[in-house]
Image (tube, rainbow, N blue to C red; front, side, top):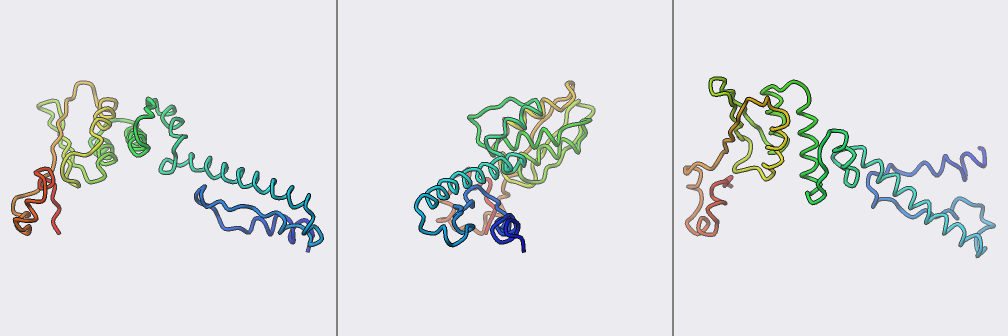
Length: 205
């Protein structure tokens, strides 16, 4: 077994579990990788402690940079995705909203079809969407059937739709609300505790 390859070298050190998040990076105790006779030597322990702190910082930076390569985990690197897709960076929006815009833009590339619009709207609503073409009226309808009420980021969806739809086509949105029949399971006291908006999107249970 080679001294520099297995016992105190890369083989042992690289045997650590795969790190998924920056906060999972642990401190590195480099003294564990040195021969016993260095233990208790103050200068060596301080040197290895300093190097271990720097190594932890480096590992953390590596994990953070890796996260920016994936849309679902990107944060400060979202501006790179937006730049590549021609989107305006708005740092006042949450990471979730910005990811929705990026995802919708990616889904909306290519020739505009009802299926493309459906995928784009689904990315914003988080549920199933039906798209109905109305060629005689030069418009289409986007019906949110997978979620009740108005999706939270409608402004973002409208912005993307304006980018991908043919200029001569208009559009309308249709939303899904609770049927009165489904409210029969509620007692008067339960219903009274809810707002009108709550009742319109009540899921039951």
